[in-house]
Length: 492
Ligand code: HEM
Image (cartoon, rainbow, N blue to C red; front, top):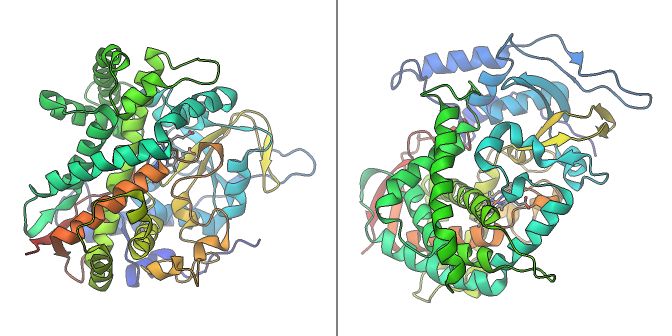
């Protein structure tokens, strides 16, 4: 398949028509400084350097072309400030496989369905999850996503027992009860910041369904610890300097370990119906089970994996339904009625499903995925030396015009039965990844988001001014930098 990108600058297209405003207010002059920030971003985006090969390829293979970027920093600033916009620029400049320096390392960027498919299919086991280690290893080590090959398979098989249809149905009752209780307490007003409310709500959902209970006095401490561990992965100074992001992440990890470790014995002894208990009781055919440390490590990773991603996806849905009131109305009409939430009921909400898929296309919660080559290998005929860190972006695939009609526009009908643009390539739509590491919580996550948006449309109307664009901050996962203020009113 040919991989071409329109020559019109994506930045210009996005400015004119796109629903996604990438970038953020200047950290130097907060509040007033969009033009200054934009000029700085333009300057960052325009930086170009002489292309050079990453390494000399063996006969029959092509070199990966790219450039290191600025001295010392490489392209760290561009990745942090411009996110998707920068990825699109690199793809336009170099095609599906290129290299750069960023975050103190050499990275190969892989974009577009065919190249991503080669990495995710991983036929000769050349790509390891240790690509994540450099970013989040110290904070999420021994989580399922950071495991490889046979060990990963064994751990994933055990974890699957926490995600059977029967378990998922049980979690859904709890998810729905927490959401109903929480939404009753939401404030209304002309500019309610919805992102922090959603973040708190999805944490409550995770605490109930994963741990069976209330965090009580530990709530604030644990919330802070989660935020610190997640943000630490993108620290510019990647050493535990006191007061720095890296040190805060390590401290956060310690808090979480102590918290879960202190509760494992009680969970093993009881017969609770939450995910923590399911991990404690999981057994394979030979009777082997997770150790206490395995359970602690998996719980820390699962809480992070479930909480932030669902918050971002729901924030994106709320944002687009605020921008496009006709779609909000269509979803509300479909979601009316007071039937209890079941998996069958959620499966019937096809308009809501299309809206969620389109929102996750335009804002992919996990916008970059990482791997490391454990031996010399190739991607689309480009030589990848052993040890190379490889980054793939679902967000980039979601923006390519060879897969999507007018990719920058919000158009949920593209997922309808008569269009199915997501089938243009196996990896055109991939917010949950693919291959053996594909998100194990996908069904849980989609059920949660559907339940939440259904409940929101039943209880509230919301809107944003026509000119409003959410500034998605791509520093760690993409989050609304302004908290996503919407005019929120309770329905009679
Ligand atoms: C909207 C929500 C979510 C999104 C967008 C999302 C996205 C992803 C992606 C892209 C991956 C693959 C990473 C890779 O291949 O390197 C992944 C893996 C994973 N996700 Fe999710 N996720 C979501 C919700 C959840 C939930 C709710 C849970 C748990 C209940 C969860 C648990 C996991 C786990 C354990 C893995 C690692 C799987 C493995 O390595 O075998 N995720 N997720």
